[in-house]
Amino acid sequence: MTVAEIETLISDEMRAVVGKVMTTMTSYPISASDIRRWASAVYYPEVPPKLYWDEDYASKTPFGGIVAPEEFNPFAIMTKDPRPTKRVMRRTDFELILGIQPPPTRAILQSEVRVHYSGVRMCPGDIIRSIERIGEYSEREGKMGLQLYTTVSNEYINQRDEQVKVLQTMFVRY
Figure (cartoon, rainbow, N blue to C red):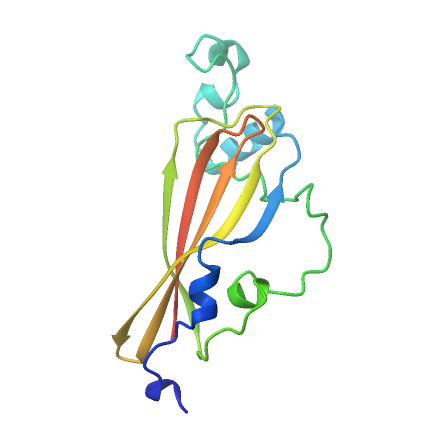
């Protein structure tokens, strides 16, 4: 059977894993230096806002100290858990990570990223936990045939169990 002859790419096993944890990560404690470097890189060649590097200034804000820019990624360099090892699977092997057979597709594209910021900011000393899950599957006909849309949700939670942000990345497979 070819992909063109398939009525749906979403199997019962795939429906059953929606919402189940795919991967988790824990960051090392965030340092003020991490935040300063990130802000310097993001705002280069401009000087970043003082909130991200000037402790005296930041202490007088409602945050009471330096905070990270909302787009800060505490996992950009290395994770505390799981310890860095040789990576066997790609992060786009969603179904394989969850122990089920992926659908028969030829290509995968990242099509969209949405971010919801909760208002809780990352600060020096915070330890962030990332929980990644398949949020949903949907499909539609396209020029290349049946297209499978997979939304992966990645929730960032601090050590106080406060949600910091949720990234939703949509992938298209055909």
